[in-house]
Amino acid sequence: MNRVADWARRYGALIRNAWLVDLQYRASIVLWIIWGVTEPAIALGIWWSIAGEGQVGGYARADFARYFFALMLVNQLTIAWDSWYLDRWIREGDLNYRLARPLHPAHEAVAENIAYKARSGGMILVVWLVAALVWPAVRLPLAPGRWTLTALAVLLAAAMRFFISFATGLLAFWTTRATAIMGLHGGVALFLSGRIAPLTLLPPAVAGVAAVLWFPYMLAFPVNLLTGAVHGTTAVLHGFAGQLVWLGLWVGAYRLAWTRGLRRYGAVGG
Amino acid sequence: MTFRIPHSALRILAALWRLNLAEELQYRANFVASVLGTVFWIGTALLTLALFFRHTTRLGGWDYWEVVVLLGVFNALTGVIEAVLRPGIGRLASEVRNGGLDLVLAKPVDAQGFVSFRRLDVWHLADVVLGLGLAGYALSRLGRVPGVLQLAAFVVALAAAGIVVYAIWVALMSLAFWFVSVENLSVLFDAVYEGARYPVTAYPGALRFVFVYLLPIAWTTTIPASALTGRLGPEIALAAAAVAALAFVLARLLWRAALRRYTGASG
Image 1 (cartoon, each protein chain N blue to C red):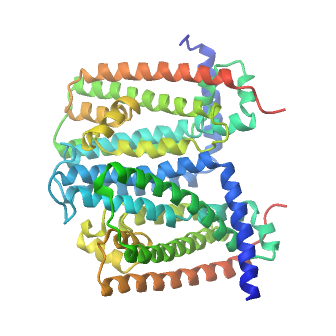
Image 2: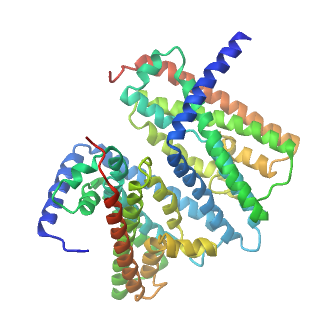
Image 3: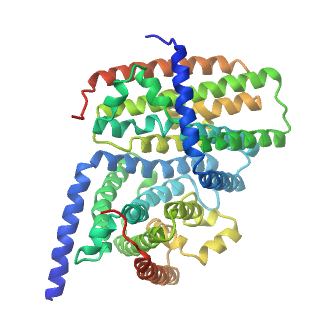
């Protein structure tokens, strides 16, 4: 029990610290949120005009609206900027003093993610609530059971995106283009994770490729869970199983990159 | 307000860009990386369009290759932004914060001109070539050969587009004088400029109004592409030039008002 209390104390301090740092830069965070809103808003605008008064692949205008609002929220709650931080830590030597601490640097990164997401996710939620007041299309039916499942799926997706970002950032031990690799991953994820369109609108071959990779579990699965597009015990269990398997694989990739990378690491800077 | 460009300004510009060029030539691998990156992003943009056109035959009344012409224009402008604006005026926000602007203001040149055009990341000019090449290819797929008048209208509209984009950056960066703590103002530009990838007619009415009149990004891609494909008559070039002039004057006024607020931060 003592250990649990210890960790709670450590995380409490780390999250408090990250929260206060973010507070200093709250205008910057608003800018990142605007950036997080415009991409789904533009995609929604285009699909809205394509759908017209009819349907596209089973999606009418209101369905697109709900999909992209859910996407906006889930993306904000799962996004991880860690590869950019790690790239800088490793290149500029900021990793050194973090290694000297009696706490693994990943804990600091996790705490930062929690603080950032609490703030930005909260803001997006307010945006959604205000929009729902004036725009019936984006209202969701009250379904506490589904919301609970979504919360769990979002948690798993956030963990997976954290480890993807962290492991990719660790490539900075070997190459100066780690962030470029993360950028490429983002470009592929645009299609395969459902950021540009619901996965059912992709050509079947592309959707088939997506289904055997981790991308749909980053975003599309929690989003579809929230909007109700994924329902029924089999589909839900299948989604969670996929999330767990890929989370496990990415944790493995992170551990491999961390141990191999540290052995290579010749510290830079004083 | 004077728009006189002294001869010395051009000499200073030439000297600055020559230095940049010499610096960049040391990092030739960056050229390959930059071109590969651009090709990748053009690829994703084309795939996105292909996805939209799987479910429709027209986007805001435009057919596929017309939108590709627009995408080429978008990419050419992005090249100008990455080559000149982001490395130049894009650094302004942090300089206002840490007082680096003092060094610029102490120089006997026009501060806005110097801040705007001091850097040239030459590799990104390849994006301009790739973008215009894409527009030309799409035009040939449309089977339309633009006449002289149409081409002239396109050149004027494209130049106007460059000025409008520039004015938006100046206006945005002037905000740094009021919101000193914000370092990443350029994110705001990136967020909104995403909207210029598609013809403005593809958006719902309210968004269309914003893009034409408030944040005039419609004038940066939709109008030049329309002039090139002949969707709009050559007289649109006159309107584009007028919009560009207005945007430039407003941005210059805002810049002056902003500069008056600056008190310096370094010791």
